[in-house]
Length: 216
Image (tube, rainbow, N blue to C red):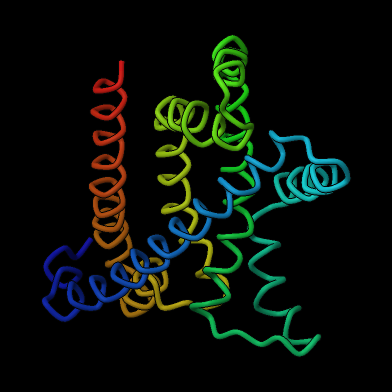
């Protein structure tokens, strides 16, 4: 194991560049999948005729597919029908599709956890269904959903490493390039990569615990 050679300034800089791409992909995927997940979750909770069942089928289909397959689809299959994306946006699209389905189920479960009595009281006080959902149900549900949502975000950040299969220049891709230079770099580089993932994910888990404790 060559720690000195593996941790040369040029290698560390190269890893950080890959980590920046990882964080960019994760942040954009989290942002869009959170918005879409809330919309789908609310629509499914509302039990809109025809639309809710169709969304349910779509969500269950995506949740039961491997993320790797979705990544392959967005990068290799979509160009066959005239929709070509570069590696960065193909990875984001795949993650958004997958994570939106996962988050929508968390949102729907969170909304269903709100006591029916509160909804009935709000409706009897003159609030419309939309007002009840927006002012009474959704705010409480979101507080209850903080731990599983943050947990899903942590999974998303780790899942960005799967984009290495399409050679996205993210952290794992750069780690493999460095490892290809010298077999003695493998353990030091992967240890450093593990630490980088751990620091970010553990920080997110601490934020989740603080938010959960704050709302207890």
